[in-house]
Length: 252
Image 1 (cartoon, rainbow, N blue to C red):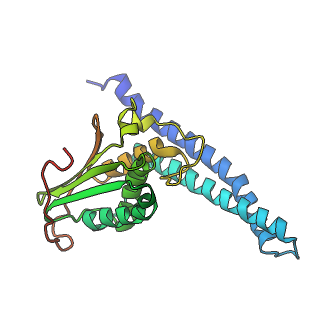
Image 2: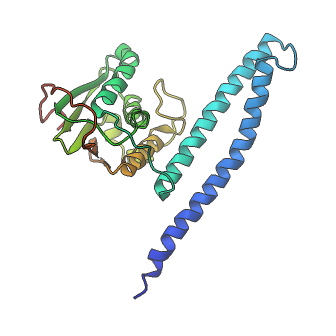
Image 3: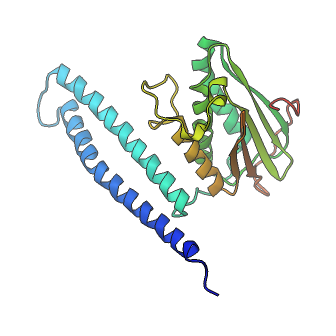
């Protein structure tokens, strides 16, 4: 018996939408690349001397153009991941090391507001099948999105555990995000926060992180007051790390 019409048409519709998105991104990149190129020519005085004021403006324009191009790359990445047109690079990124490194990077900014994350780790075996750079990007998208919503003196709990087969990370949501109906649909803020997970806001960044985790064979879910990420442990991967004392209910 032939499959239902909806089942056969859905993949084709997804591919068509993805193709349209890639075409749109190509059309957007072309003028932005040109603007960035001309700005760099002025800033570097390739065709002759330019006043310092013009060079300063050109440098700012080049930076803004680079941010736009990075944002276009993220949109393209999400589109390809959602349609199965790309997969994450295989690797052996250590989830414990990457989470610790990401939180350390954020600590310097959050310390002045007396806010931050409280990490508890339990278990052994935190090697994933994800390349370390991709794993760093995933963790940055998640924690920078949460950090941008922390109120002064607010500290949220993060629990990272491994049973040797699955890695589970549970992150409490800041109060402002927990009050949202759908954090994955959060709009782009009017003003760029001190900590930013990406130019399209936390909602987009978290959707991209979800697609990346799913591509790696994991699961990314949003519960009432927390984000839960599950990833398979890489069999025969990198060395295990000693267990840190942790409370099973640290992030419960």
